[in-house]
Image 1 (cartoon, chains in turn brown, green):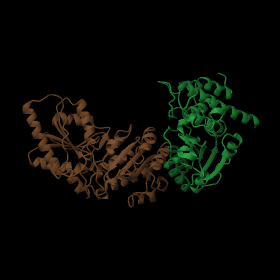
Image 2 (tube, each protein chain N blue to C red):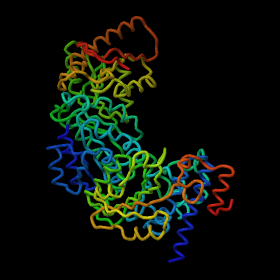
Image 3 (cartoon, one colour):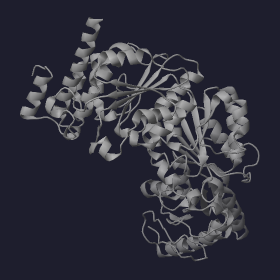
Image 4 (cartoon, each protein chain N blue to C red):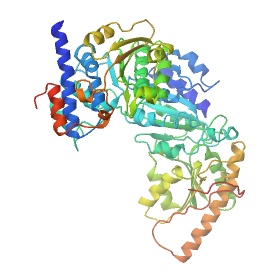
Amino acid sequence: MRTAFIEALTQAAEKDHRIMLLVGDLGFGVVTDFAKKFPRQFVNVGVAEQNMAGIATGLALSGKIVFTYSIANFPILRCLEQLRNDVCYHKANVTSVSVGAGFSYGALGMTHHGTEDIAIMRSLPYMTTIAPGDPIETRAATAEAAKGIGPVFLRLGRAGEPIVHGGDVQWELGKAIRVREGKDVTLISTGAMLKTAVDAGLALSKKGLSAQILSMHTIKPIDETAILSAAQSTGIILTIEEHSHIGGLGGAVAEILCEKSSRKVCFKRIALPSEFTKHVGDQDYLRGIYGLTVDGIVGNTLKLMKRERKEERGKTGLAPQLDFPDLRGKQKHQGAKND
Amino acid sequence: MAQEHSKILKLAQKIRIHATRMIHTAKSSHLGSNLSMAEIMAVLYGKFLHISPDEPSAADRDRLILSKGHAAAGYYAVLAECGFFPIEWLDSFYVNGARLAGHATRGTPGIEVSSGALGHGLPMAAGMALAGKRDRLSYRVFAVLSDGECDEGSTWEAAMFSAHHALDNLVAIVDYNKIQALGHTKNIVDLEPFADKWRAFGWSVREIDGHDIEEILSALKEVPFETDRPTCIIAHTIKGKGVSFMEDDVLWHYRNPQGEEYEEAMRELGAHL
């Protein structure tokens, strides 16, 4: 994703000299060519993220379209008040790019895990929150932010994520992409969980179930229409995110379902518990522990469908029913209980 | 010249009178911080800044960021006195449904950025100065800082950055009244040797009497003191300056004058109640 990002930004910066890239002394090998090509549009501000956000605001208020770039929590949580007061309050054209979403930097440990960022960033006024599903979506999201659309949080994986969308895809800010049609269940994924969600859809089809897959790349503003239409058409929704179960994609979808769905919905968040992992391992390993896998999604889907059928037979209630079960995978581990 | 000085002195006194009245009426805080910066703001807006109320967004205007956004009353007062908005607006400070919030807020004519959380001003000012350099524009950027916010790491991050990027179009003016929220700076986190710190960070520094119009003006006229270096003017001031019983007393970081205190303060400031 970071390669797609820097390529798209390079293209945009060639055409629009207002575009600037600020890095917090990270991006070795990623930003080198950009810096060489556009020395007047690049600044390494050093290891000083608060200053980076403030400088980005000053530049934006002077007519620039600014991207700040660093890893996981550094460009967002370290300078959260600067993003709130400086960037967001002034509706400054600043995109905070965070590379290493979720467990991308798994083995590096909890400081490098971006697992609460969606919840925190989407709560900031005016902060458009985007977690592209693959490199193709990353390219489109970068081009969109480069237009200067106010404050943006661009949450990226790292390098080597598979391309999910074949060929050109219609990417529009705030509009979910239907990657697969289906009538039995809807899987809504954000960020780089998209490939796993798509694979889970294939696995479900082998079991005779037809799963609709939505890539919810924009979490704010969220695509209410897509969520409500999924509620209507399938009645069973699972959200999939490499993020805490508090306030992320699942939270955003639940907010819409609770307030606006006219149909009873069986709902489940496949996400991380609110705890710091005590496990050491790479991204795939950690995803496995927390059930962010094809098997985890398929298992949870089947369980949810079984419950839904039981409830249908029992004809319980008409109000939308939300279900927040234990989201951990089969491998039980020691750790704090969910909040 | 003498006439000009008297005009600036009058403006400084008007800032004090407005701020005292506004804080009295609103029953708000930070009067001491307003009183200490009155001459600095009067010289900047009354004489020095290249900025016009008729065109407050002109591309080549000088930019000023009041990083010590808690001194908003005095900031609003100088903007109103210089024609950025009607004087009557000052009566709406802190009032429900009105225009002027308790901390400096963008959207008020003449205000570049909202401030109120400390340590935000110098980084934003540095960004504006960098944009000026990159775009080869001649405007200058002024950030008025409190001494207390020099406890913030972000202030020093910006200080290092600005020197590295040779931002000689950037001027930091520290209102060094030596009292922060809970007491004297020397007893909380001592800033001294303050000027040497800025020098060590690569800035060109001058210390002045922040209540002396002539010293403020002559320092500003010589900015930048050195090519390719940002400028720091450490303005030695007295918190609560102009009202004898408020001077150098941390109480007036918070207390608002009522009753006899208010009357006495206004009398000392030469205001007609």
